[in-house]
Length: 198
Image: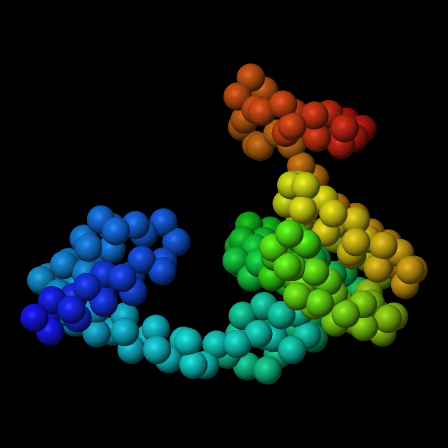
């Protein structure tokens, strides 16, 4: 009976992954146990090490194994250009897709008073201290255009404005190769509102 209990624990543990429900967790568990025990053991080792060694950068709050991440430690990055994002995964996305040469600040979410997420939970005191150093000249808002994202962007913009830092926001709207008739109304409205000279 203890074997079944351990299998149930494995299935339940796999359900913590995003998008993995009961059936997917069961499929993954059986695959690892029946076809890839070596892969499962490697996954367990790497997962345990990652949970122990990976933390947050003391400057930008992204994920790193060191006290300061490689981007913040890079002297060739433009310290005067700071991009504010919600999650560490967005730093990776921007780095992979663009040639952005500045630095980042990771909020770890959006302001949401109903969920108990206020300025302290987003590290906005740390962002304010970073802006007060006087090095940042432009703050780029790369925050999602939701209601909470808009409130967060407004709050961050006000922090920057008080410090005399210029605030910009990434463009939003029609994706490259997208058809206008496939867009939702909100996206199309943002695209029209953010139009610029051709």
